[in-house]
Image (cartoon, rainbow, N blue to C red; front, side, top):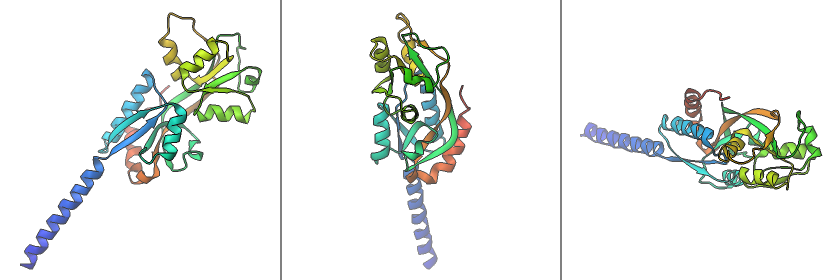
Length: 228
């Protein structure tokens, strides 16, 4: 009788444990992102697959870059940041960087005015630059060099600023700028310089999910190659 009772309890505990694991595995991971565009759609889908491969569903939440950063920092419903540059941990202190590069980000300067061919970060002080607020690496570089600059909410607004001569140069990630330029092929195209900077970008996971970080890292490694 004791053995039968123990067996029943053991089965119940196993069912409870299995149900708990299933519930955890069906959890939806909410991922904020400031990045949009056709090229970056493929990155989003690979991240989705990386989570799916370890048993998690995902919800991608797109918003302006600064808002995405704020939500990642303060909204307890956000579980991950789709893509951020190395060093963002100084702001997203509760996040873990998954150390697999997702893509190489190129930062370019765009203008409808005459700008020097070999533009560098140091020479930007000669111009009136604009960028998208919340793109930390660009804003920090301006601040480090003591360059006055304007910010807007979207890449399209930055392009409009230089077209209307309200700014001389838009400093932007090439992938985002190209997406806007390619939708307006029948209008005058802005000039662009040599690449100002290149850097890898990474996926960031909130530390409350640290238990899945090793499996996620392996899954991302299987789903990504460094993109050029």
